[in-house]
Length: 511
Image 1: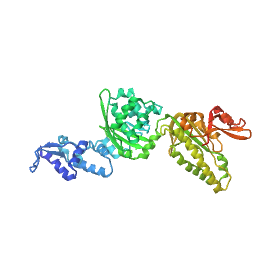
Image 2 (image 1 turned 90 degrees about the vertical axis):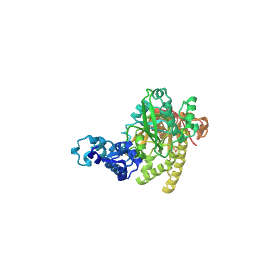
Image 3 (image 1 turned 180 degrees about the horizontal axis):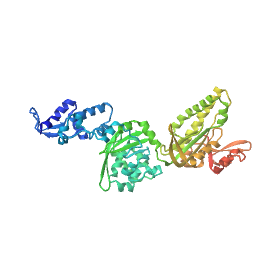
């Protein structure tokens, strides 16, 4: 070795002394590629007792100081590696023309693409994730998925599946298509079953999706017993290798995190870096907001409750503007707790109307909960009406007229720059709105279709029927239905509005 080469190298021992890092940290930096592997040879100094010792180019001092600086600035190790990898130089620089070497900076050659990456901060978002990612709800149905996950993990278009139950992740894993694509499909089931165990007891396995076979239940119960549940309050990291039927392997590091709305999975190939993952996942509110905006349009069973304040135009005209808005705000605040209690989801509405959805995928008791919520709203409105009578010293009664319907429609998020609402497309919401308009004096109207979907036991919890005029008095006939046309006087101006649902059988829920 020449005298020049001896002067431009530093031993591992000197390096540790000058930088203050541990040998374990040094080995880690070598492994990550932040600094080059040492040149192992006989000691250059006479006082060295070791037979072999590692030597590094002097430029590694710059690299290590840069790492320390970037750590202090809050950069993740992934970001540091991406910035510095390729900037440090290996022992091969000794082969370059030595006459032009005058300073440390001369040796450090920073490629332009690396320089631009270092100079501007890259922010990871839902829209620019290039590696597989998806969100599943607590029915374990895929709510959102990117193209990389469709291609690399499932090998099919998940977005084309409109029925939520058909996007159940375990149903997909058991499908012949997935088994034909992925050799180790059982490992995917093992991994995802750990999340089931985090949220549900073992007897929930047989309820994972409709039509689950006894063989599948038996298989999943064995997996449930052998797996370890995942902590629900942390950002977790896991490792899995996807083995395709052709024998090719794709190892991944998987990040997972729990939200109230579901579980998010992000796959990062082991041989690549995804800058900003930790920062991205730490912004939980923004992440779930973005995911809900992109939620797949889904054909799902649900209940919708539409409520309107009776004579709202007249009340608005009678009250000063500030008092009318005070009334509406009190009404909303009073109702909000009831909707939370019964798992209602806020829907898009206009004016002083109220629209809430009760999804089967979130709540197996969605039918009864919608009815209980309506009855509770009626009670709360009676209290609010009494309060305003005393406060305002008026004789007006406040009535919230409610219509409830059940159906299966496309359900999706509708977002603006300031908020997210949910809406359904189809007759289900339209019929509920018509029933709310038909209802009077705080009544609750619903369809025969909804009542027929209740079990006999659930149906017995409610009193429902039809008011009939018998001579000069009203008689309530229990467990009866009537057509909409029988509720409306043909001479009423509203009759035309209900003509297209005239034959729809409905009933009134009284308690």
